[in-house]
Structures are given as structure tokens and as C-alpha cells.
Image (cartoon, rainbow, N blue to C red; front, side):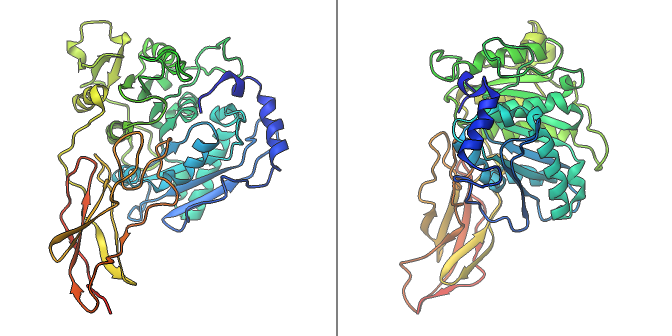
Length: 459
């Protein structure tokens, strides 16, 4: 759901609606079904507050911590958008294998909030971090640090991804805490830097010199006002233009990537978002926990017209660089050019092979990690060296590349989570078989096969 005047203009209505529709401490559907949060997952939930300035909605935070990490270097936050459906989608964000692969690469945790916002309530009461979500977020890091034994969670830097109202939140956090933020990807939502009389319920933020040093990517669909200027999301592009111009005119490290295929959904943006965040994390994370963020290197930057399709090195750019989108490197500029053309980012790296493949209670089960570059589309099952099945037969993603975990509107896996298992219903009783499992990424590359540690005998 977009941030519309009807949902944002009168904040007190949100509190009234909340009181009328649920008690302060009650957990209401659709937020009453969670994936389990056994280690390496951890969860905290906070009730709504009736105190002025505090969060008026309940919220839960789920975090995944790579088991191999002894000391975390940062937290990647995957923040859903506005509306009841988008808020519910946050329940699975920490379980996304592709985002986990990015987090593991940089020894970071992956955190996904889920605000229990009632239907049609005021999204600004959480997506403006000054309305209590900033404080709740920092409290959750401390509490999750205690639960997980990673006390450094309360101090490590943050890399932020946000969709719609989540983009508003992530951008607002950059303006409040630039010294803590590695980078921020704003999909279809940005904060206000100047009061807007057309949106009186949305408070503006102040820009600082420090916020200009945080890499930011404004990402939206072309149907959000770039080419389609009449639909319900047409205001997204003008808001992005204003935000970009104000930040970039003062030297901000900010770019724009227009998805040529999508509207307010997330499309295939994750393949570029993860690559861009990967580059920023590589450049900015401190070597030791507790040290300040490293400055983003200025050398090697590329520039591109915000609605263009070609980027060039900063040295070769002939127009005003303060009107052009900033890109951190030649490699990211190449990915940007492919993304704004057709979103079809390429990849020549096969995914990691599955692990712990075995037969349990008559089913083939395994574990797997996603390919950082291209995620995980599914698996091929072989029996005695011959193709047996694809798992799943067809991944579901109405907005982009089909993936193993399926995708919701706000770029998170569907519930229930898709399990890694397969039952061979055509196996002959009493016969032994040798099984192999092959991972396949979203550009069709195969991993090396992994052989099941034990065979199956049907009796």
C-alpha cells in the first residue's frame, strides 16, 4: 500500500482505529502465525504503547545470525512496506536464503521487522522512525544481542533495505543516524526533506553533511510515475526526484535505478540491490567491531543520467555531475546498465552445492545456501544418475524470476516456508537407490551434485 493522504494526514485517527480494533496488548491476525525462531533465528516482540512519542503498534523482530560467525560486523535490515499485507510479509524476511547469503558473506546478521499495523491505519506511525520505531529498533538489537549471545548487535553498523513505507523508514534512519549506516536501498519510498503542503501528515527531515556520505540508491518501477503518470503510485517518481535532487545537489552519494518493467511491486530488484549492497559493505564495514565506518571511496565512481541507460566514469562525464546518479564502481555501473535495460542481470558463478543430503523417514532431505549473485531457483533430483524430478516443479514469483522460496509483494518468502525435501513415490519396494541433489540458481546454472549419505530401500 502506498502512503496516501487518506492514511497519513490525521495521525490521531490511527491511534483511535487501533484502540477500536484491538486491545493494546493483543496479538491479532494476520500476525499470529510465525515461522519457528530456533537458533540461528531469534525473535523479540513488543506490545503497543499508549505513551506519547512511542510506537502505537505491536512489532516483532526476527533475526538470523550465521552460525559460523563468532563476532558480527553488521546488521542487514529488510524492511517491509505499508499496509496489513506488507507488514505480514515481514514475518519471513529473515528466512530469505538469498539475503542470508549476502549477510553471511560479510559476517552480518539479517533482521526483518513486522509491524502489526491494522488495516487502513496510519503507516506514518511506524515508517517515520521518530514515531517510536527508531527507539524500538535499537531496543530490539540490544535484546536480541542478549538472547543470541552477540552483545555486539547493539553497536554494529546497519545496511538498510526498505520497500515503500520501508523506504521512507530507511531514508529517515539515514538522516537520523548517518554514522551507523553503511548504505540504504530505497525501493518505491523516500522521506521528505522539505514540508509538502499536499502531504501535511508527513513531517520533513533535516539533511546533514554526514548523511551525504551514506551511499543511497533510489529504486522504483517505471509505472510509478515515470512512464505511467495516472495510476495510484504515480506520486512515487516526483517524490524520488525531489529527494534525489536535494541530496545530490549537495554532493550526496545517491543514485537512481528505474525498473523498466514493474510498478510498486519489487520485480527483479533484489539481484541489483544485493550486488549494490555487497559493494557498499565491502568498502565500508570496519575491520574490527567497534571501529567507525570507512568512508566510501570517491575514486572509481561512475555517473549516469537518472532516467538514462548508459553510465560512464566520472572523469568522462561531460554534463553537470550534480544532476547525475552516482554509482560506486565500474562493476556496479555495468550491473546498473543491465538492470535499467531489462533487469536481466547476468551471472557466471554456479551456486553452492547442497549439504547434508540424506534419507529420513522415507524422504530425501537436504540443506542449501543461495548463490549471492543469483539466488536459488530450485533443485534437480537424480536417481541412479538419471533425472528424477525438479523441486519445486515451478517456483512462484508473479513479479520476477521464479525462485525456490517463492516471493511476496514486499520481496520476502511465502508462508509456509518451502521445505527442502522430496519423496520418491515411484521407488520400487525393496530396491536400493543412489540419489543426488543439484542446486540451480535463477540464471539456470547448476551446482556440483551432492550424493545422499544413505540410500533408500522401499519395503
